[in-house]
Image 1 (cartoon, rainbow, N blue to C red):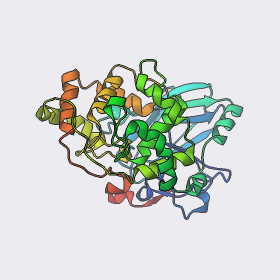
Image 2 (image 1 turned 45 degrees about the vertical axis):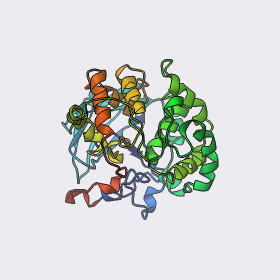
Image 3 (image 1 turned 135 degrees about the horizontal axis):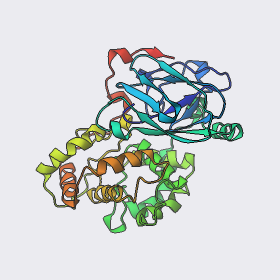
Image 4 (image 1 turned 180 degrees about the horizontal axis):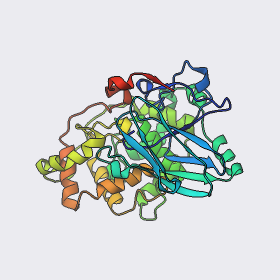
Length: 350
């Protein structure tokens, strides 16, 4: 989908479960039919890196949940369109170990040029270890929902910087958390824990988060997010001076992913911008533009932002966009179910 790749492998039964684009949600990003027992052992790869075993024929089934895309790995010398409402496929047999870039070679919208992924061809033992480390659909269904009461206790550590109501604190360089969608907070905590974010020597404030994120396991993260969702979504006081009228024009590029109202869109993996800390957003744009953030080889979403942030040519342009974002009205972050689907996508697909 725009502008990301994700992958699913059959489990021990060797059969992929039935899916439908209409079932796609943040909790079920592949749209797997929960009533189909064959989907329970499907191995889910939410990131944009696929591993394959060397020397084994592989059939890759291709689906799109939005527009026309094209799966291409130049070194494999094959390419195939992904067409909404149908399933296409390619056969390959990887013959050389290594990492190879996946590209979309069908113009698919604003960030088409940044729709990149990676195929890693492994020796059989390494491939087996990688598969064993991934979650199945059954694992995700079995996860217990977050406990807001338990999350409140966890948040006691966070609020020392981020504020009692998650409102953010520029003095301590801590952004607002209240109002940001849970899937985005979970991803950032994961990235800090895995060294995908905060590993740059120039990212002083990101480095501070690494230790705190390491204190949270998956259950604690879900509990914390459940509590954050109970906090009031107050508008932060604007701190930047810019030309909002000029920023509105510049924001049109941002709106393609983040939404016309800056509400954030899960399907494009874009967080909420409206009612967020403008000084923090400004800093992250500068970090992307300067290569402080988005350079880690596993930070595919950060790499996309590094590309797009460079469309803002100077600090004045950044300040103008922030000034416009400060004018946006409050709107709940968009989830997958909020976006209407074409009739051709309202069908079950295998």
